[in-house]
Image (tube, rainbow, N blue to C red; front, side, top):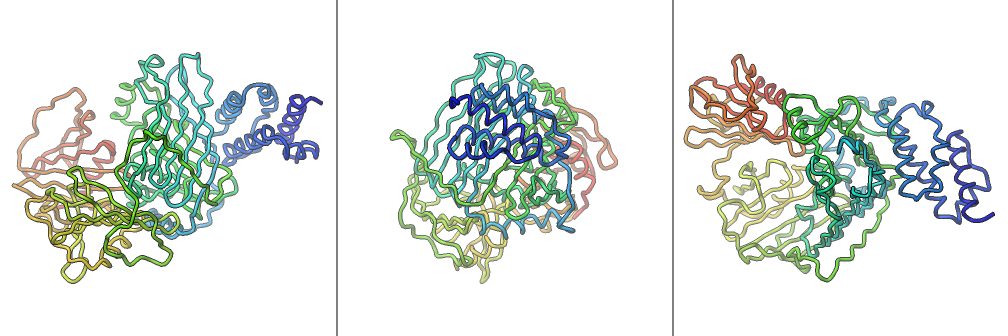
Length: 588
């Protein structure tokens, strides 16, 4: 039998055996050992099982004829046919199994994540992504690829766009992002407006950088796909809804929003993807042992502001089926090395490997030195950098004697919570809880990492530095904890948020920081009436027993109370949630 005909025969047998739920014939099984194409075909069938595993598999349709017709097509076309058949009939059919964790709360996920991190030394998985509503002529796109990770700083995400486009005028959204210990190579397309497609599309472009500092801020979001630290730090807007079994794997099912699930950006931050609204509802299935997200589903939210956003982008999202799905299968937790070959003309990230002079930290057993060296500030000053890791967990210390800006070194936010470091020493905790800055006489330093907030503070304390209060003209000088704001200040009485504030010249500003990128900025200042509205997207709303207004374009809720004009701004929370937060306000 000719090899091509033999492969067709074997693949047909594999497909029929799959549908009939029986082992393949001995002849077919023996053939898999010597044929990469047929072995890949069998793995594709396993991928289909991933997409169906969460529901009742007995309801799966017989796709034998479809698979057989696809055998003679290129692998790219087969993947699209198989994925679309299954996706269209089975995705979203996840059902909860018998719960194993009788009691688990959202605020405990952070502890569970950090407990599991030392055991995660690597990860390898097949990856399927389904994207719906990108364009009226392309209502669904399906991607197949892989994810490889070696702790703590090697990651590769590759996605092959298997979509059957209307014509050759459309450019597939293939995505390849690889980084390893400071080197990055990414090949991706750029997004463009729906109404300009496909003419606005350009060929994929390559980005190459070498010499990035350890755990460069630009690469921390991709690492969320294997360790969602930022998505679990605070629990506002985070709810555990079940403990189902997914493809035989015990999981914890969590509900949040797109803004609360930073890890979605690991996929969507690079490439020509559709947009997702910050308030869109997200269901995540976290592997119970590793707390790695093995499945993510995004559903369109329904609200006035979301509908307006949708219309202006040319989308027409439904309410019942997910508009975005990420699914991992065949997952193992063995290290999967990522070798990045940067070209000679790669851009420099400004970091040079070598010994670093930083105060020695007292770290938990298991942490070892990862990378160290120096980087340069924009004004030429030198920063000493050292990092340590323990499996998936990591810690970085950066120190400089050349800091001259009127704000804390290493913190981007103007808000920072003062923390006691013992013996009169003070540090400043970032609202997200992932960094502690210390300002001393002659040295400015920041400790950051994926470990818990308590661990970060303990590490900063172990450095035995004498941290000084920031000078009065620095940005963070006026920041205080909520309990220190002026008496009578209205504060939301809620849990799961970091709440910091400042009061200057009768104006009080409060920053609420929640899970992922969820943020609310609340300001209050003397006033008897609201300024006239400035746009067409303003509606009257009932808030705190009065009539206020919501501006969808500016994502702002305003009202007058007690001779104060109060304004809540958030690009990550919707109107209804802002009104609920306002209702929870009480005077301090």
